[in-house]
Length: 160
Image 1 (cartoon, helix red, strand yellow):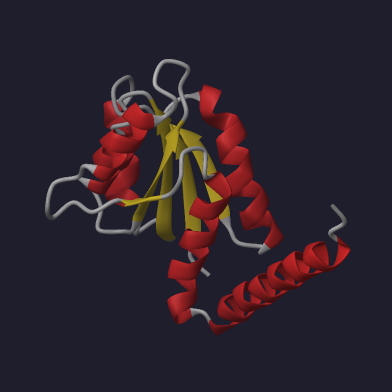
Image 2 (image 1 turned 90 degrees about the vertical axis):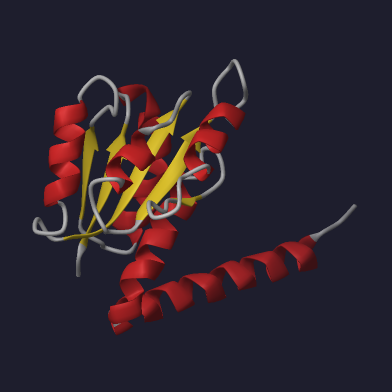
């Protein structure tokens, strides 16, 4: 199975990264986590992106708040799928990061999940990898079936 990269623009994004890592661990998916800032460590962010495919990665999750150029900076330097996770901020509630992540120019796509959506970013990365991995596809289907049953059990237990 290809690896998933979880890249944070700042260590302050680690709580969101942990959500992604928890999902990747649950699926026993190989991953690496790094802190590379599009603005403060642009050389390292670029080098990682340029070499990610050869290093065995199949998808990259980029987590950043505020200006949130990380996902775009990474996507500009690789043809691997990049999934942006905008992080909520005190000033704008994540709207600034969301707009920065979804407003990519034609030719440099970035998939975007909800603000603080680390878990969904990991699930999307796994779905991308599952296109060519039958065992992973089956694990994802089992997860969906379990989630389905949880909702039905919640409905059955509802007492208002």
